[in-house]
Amino acid sequence: MSQGMQDGDEGILVNSTGALFQFLKTLTPLALLNATAFKGRSRSFRSALVDSWIILNFGLALAAAILAALNVTLLSWLPAAVGIYAAYRLYDILIVQVNVLVFDPYFHQRKFLRGEVDQPYSLRGRYRLLIAVLMNFFEIGLWYSAAYLHLRQIGELVIAGVDADGIVSLPIVFQQCMRALVTFDISVFSAHQGSLSLTLIVLQSFIGMFMTVVMLARIISLLPPPNADSDPKQQ
Image (cartoon, rainbow, N blue to C red; front, side):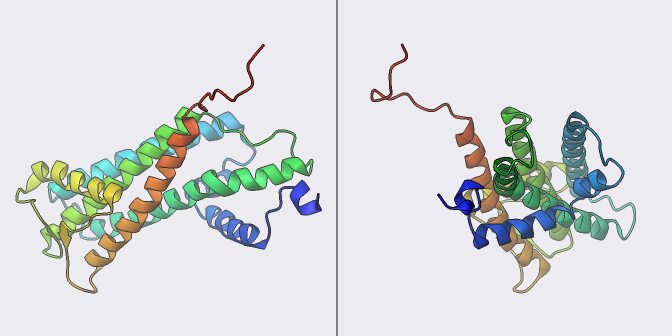
C-alpha cells in the first residue's frame, strides 16, 4: 500500500480544495474568536459557544424579518447594514457546513493516521449537529424573508400570491422562501434583469440546493444500518 493511502491522502484535488475551504473558515467569526479571545479554551466551552452563536443568529434573523415586515427603519443605513451582515452570515454557514461535512473529518483523520493526534475525528453529538443544520436552514429562510420584504416594499421585487402588508405578510413570505430553498422553485419571485433582487433570487436556488444536500447527508448518517439475512449471526 502506498504512503499516500496509508496516511489517508486522497491527492492534490482533495487537498487543494480542502486547503481553500480551511482557509476560508479562518475568516468566519467563531474561528477568529477561537484564534484570539478564546484561544486555548476547552472543547466543551467551544461547543457551548457554537450553540450560543447559532441561537443568537437565529434570533437576529427573526428580529430582522419582523422589523422588515413592519417596515420599521430606525436608521437610514440599517437595511444596508443588515444586508451586509446577512451576507456574511450566509458565508459563515456555507463555509462551516462544507468543512464540518467534508474537510474537518478528512484532515483530522490524516493527522490521526500519521500519529499527530491521539483520537480519531468525532462529533460532539449527532442529534445536536442535525438540530444545528435545521436551525441554519430556517435562519437562511428568515434572512431571505427580511431581504425580500424590504425589496418588495421599495418596489424592487414582486412575490406572487402575497397581497398583504405588515406582520401578516411575514409567514407567507417565509413559506415561499423555504419552498424555494427546498424545491429550487423561484417562479413566485420576479425582479428586473440585472437587479440586486434577481441576483438574490438566483443565489437562493444554489444555496437551497447545497443545504438540501447537507440535510440529506446528516439525516442519512443518523439512520441505523439495516440488517440483512446475509449478515453474520451473533453467537
